Image (cartoon, rainbow, N blue to C red; front, side):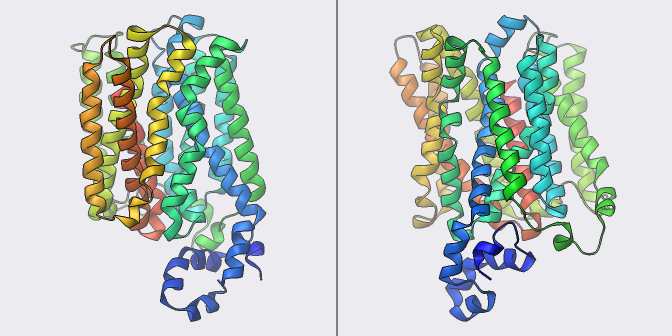
Length: 465
């Protein structure tokens, strides 16, 4: 049977395994390739399959939706507040989005490993579209906060895009595939601030246009997945248990501890921005209790005998995964904080023109994209991945710290520093994401990448608040 016929939509479990091991098979001997039916013609047909192409295009839109749904609104919170506020809850728009994205992404990635990803992608994005419609039509800050909760659940599905790339692309091409997806999100990751500010300055929709754009992109992606994306179904993945039995095995205790701990910690940081003082009982209690609950979550996942833990602690016995999660999340904190402060610096030091602020704010996102593309060839050709990460981390630390020296006389220096820091973070992101997917056990790729994405999102939220 031609590979075009077995691509994505009709692949059975054996086809998926054969594709995943294509690199190993081709490097050992051609006899195994013939046994698996993976010759050059079939591989060419696979890449040309309409369902594969549709799934990849849906994944590109999926990745873009992350930056439209979160990055663009975050860049224009002050404008939203001026239009339908003022409200002390304005920062909850970005906070609840990040919180629900981080928590539900871990759930989505874990369950999708067990029962398949198709309906998590489609259903999650439909919920996100509903949330964006609520935000686009809201007339109070609290309504937009409520819509952001649903949009954040959609973001949890959108963060599955690295896992989809790991599913569709053989090992030897994954770093290039990840770099290609990063290039495809340049319009929203790189130029998102400029697009958002231009909508405000040049269109009647204003800031609401950002949410309508997310409706269009996420809705199209969900439709393409509905038509084109047919990964192995539940019965191919698990023939021992029913879907309901798998649902009952979900680690609801761990989910409760993880969610409640995070929301308490993040609320503590948010309240300290003006609603309550840092020395108030509300802030101190939220931070202390939330931290203790997260510690309890770690103990619970480690020592309670769970049939299907939310976070398999065995993953942290793989030192490369632990290192990638820690370093990648810390650098995400630095980069997201830079994205918050850089537009403020531009507005205070250089200009008040909305379009100019948006254009100058693009340096960090464009640089991150360029960093992944520039350093993708080094992943294999240079090797020494540990030292690649160390070098990129040092570059990030130096130039993000140097932003403190920027004044109204040194605009070019600020632009240069944000570009250099963004390049380094892109380098780190490429290496850590690809390594995490490569060293995780096959049945736990989803939860490994999911926890990594979740911690990056949560660490970034803490840095932003």
